[in-house]
Figure 1 (tube, rainbow, N blue to C red):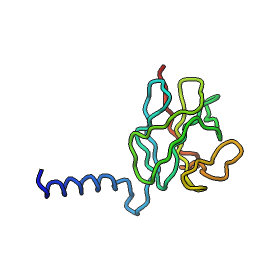
Figure 2: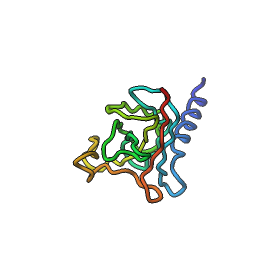
Figure 3: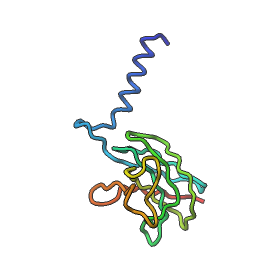
Length: 139
C-alpha cells in the first residue's frame, strides 16, 4: 500500500470513529448488548459515551436492576468503544444481567457508586431513566 492510500485509509478510520458525534457536536449515549454464554465476564458490543465513565453490570431481582450494588464494572473513555470486556466480581441468579452506563464525576478513574455512597458516578439518564441494556446469559 503506497503512502497516499495509507493516509486516505487513516482518514477514513478517523472519520468513522468521530462519526458518533451529532451535528451539534454532542455525543449521544448508547449501549448495545447481545446474548452471551455463561462466563466470569460479559462483553458489551458497543458503548457510546458523551463523557468518560463506567459500564456497570447489575444483577436483576424481581425484574429490576439491583442498585446501587453491582457485580462488575469497567472504565470507558468518551466516544464509541466496541467489545467492552467487563469482569464479573459478584454473583447473580437467573438468566439476565443489566449493563448500565455511569458517569465518572467523582475521583477520576475510581468507581465510587455503590452501597454506602451514591453521590458520585451516577447512572447516565436518558428519557427520564438510567441508560440500560439487558444481557441474556445462556448456561
